Image (cartoon, rainbow, N blue to C red; front, top):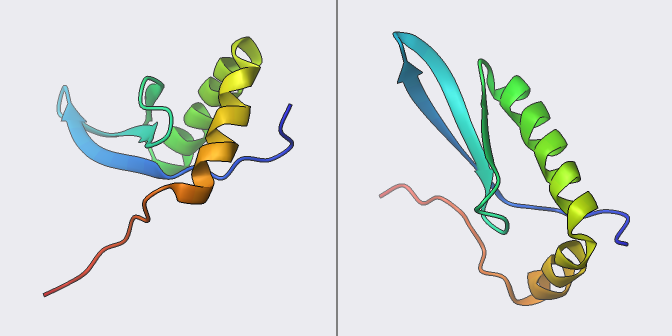
Length: 79
């Protein structure tokens, strides 16, 4: 098993029933999506979901680490 994995995450603010929430997922594991009332809570929820995912599929963690060497870089540019 891999000791540490760095993942790129996407956080999307949304409104659900008039309340702001944050949906969050990882670029490398797009099937794992969760949400929280704050960005911090969403990150906690995603960490927990990903830990459960990798517990059930440890080979996925190894594949992600191996693929990260050639992964695209994500950044933002203002024009």
